[in-house]
Length: 454
Image (cartoon, rainbow, N blue to C red):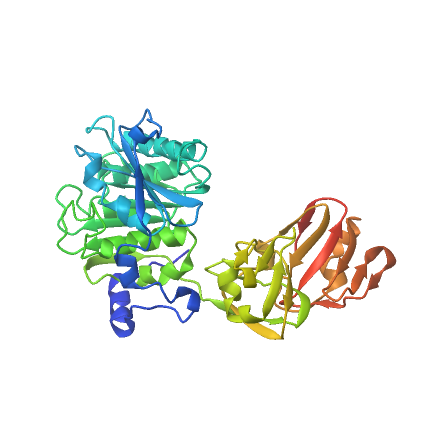
């Protein structure tokens, strides 16, 4: 069970260590309280039903805000307002989040008197609208939606509806509940029994959804095995979190950081969530930020095959190899897609976990990669029939025959090779490779598709 981090302890710790920059990693240097509070780097474009987006049956009217100069596919969040209020009451969240690269859809309700259950349905229906934009031929979002990354949020009864949706749709990546309201007479822990990471923002002086009766109860009813955080804004009323400007901008910082961590899997924002806002009158969380791991990889002059057991926060191949790019001639992935620095061409795109890469260098170089360690037992590698270029995930050297023993025993492995051409031939009981080593990649030829589990 995760242990909640109490407010007073963190506040004291924060006063001792407060800093706008949280990571020595070059990949996280640009992530600060200031950058997470201000408008982001992307320009924002909008789409409405007049532009051709779907008119969903479970909500009334919607606006899609998206970054028109960011790199797709886009992760998305839908936000719905509260009782007796219109879409416009929460629309400030749209341009703010979109300017940071997150597609945001704000919606209205078919009836302003709708209860949280109906607002749950409205949120889930709006996700279908976003998905349809991915296939609508004339949409600027055609082919630009990440179909596996959706979050939901809402204010007041909308925040209650967002939490109810998490119990229905287990594929959701994050929930943002803003001054949430649920019927206290009928609410039970079973209503909020879900595993979707939950952020709750509330106001200390909220007379409509008093934190002690709503936000704090919702936090308590959500399982302790679910990542969750509650932030109450000092002197805040019910409307304090209808936009990112609430709590002197700390509302925006916390919501953005939550979505970056859980919707986009960007751990650079995790420390920002553990820095208690100066406007907080109450704060509690059970989340923890993982410590980054370093791996130094040798890039030999000439050709080699390299790999990593690290998952960096920024997976862009150009970004990762930029410290040694002056010496790099070419890099290729398993299917032959190339990275050509002299031509400013990145056909590889992003570093793929479990894959090895062919690299040709002018000189010997060492590259250090920082991020979260990929545990071999939790990261099986998919193999396709024929040749595969695979990563080596263990942190210690292992005899190649032992590492590939299951593939050999099932008569699947034809041959394994290192970058120098040394071979493992199971049919001949021959191991010319010796030990597999961290930082190196290997070629495998298999008879049929399967999984490599170190």
